Image 1 (spheres, one colour):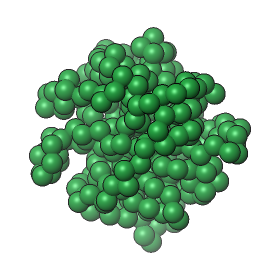
Image 2 (spheres, one colour):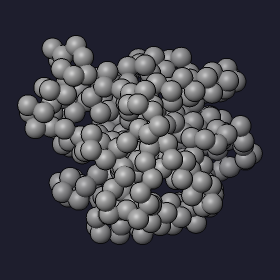
Image 3 (tube, one colour):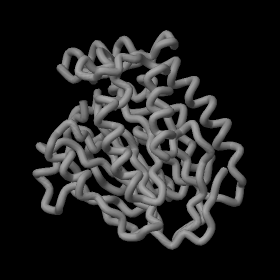
Length: 295
């Protein structure tokens, strides 16, 4: 682990910047820390192309003391508009190396310790994917779930763009990531709370509010259902659902911190693209959700 003693700043979070939209890119251009010692957690879905991801993370890394990034499904897409046509693990590793060039912390780096207000706490960037275990009601297998989802017309674009190479499936890649990540989290000293950052929630309950419940299949894994207790989680930071809000499960705070698409954030009364403060905690009340599918 690494640490920086005496940091007086705040720990902020954001996700689902989707800067392929000019309106969202403008939001990133305006993002600034309150203090020179502020950290920013970026919980995935910055963009689909490497060039856009590099611009956004580089811009933020130049402003914040530390930027911590985890991949969302959109970063992992092999998109026809991207000049980088790598797939699966090779694409992820390429993005990790790019982040290291920019000074951005990734899931492959030592977990940093936040020692500012509200700390100390271990900030644990995670890359876990999903394994289709959040099945629709009445479905017992992935095949049944996919058939049901296809019947409703709700199928995640990952099925066409997110390749698991060299793993035989996305769920196999997910299981490997969960096993390795669980081992690393178990090595954190028992006297330190954790702030896990993952694109998907560690528990299924945040997906209960989706308009299209079948989309939950692409939103996490039941393998992490007890991690908020097992690894002494203070706050679980995630995105993906485009339903920014605070929920509590078994006394643990879950923060969905996404910006979402312009058509979504335009419906909100407050200004878009606001960073969510994680530490010191402001005990935010639950926000009015946007119940849309993030594709």
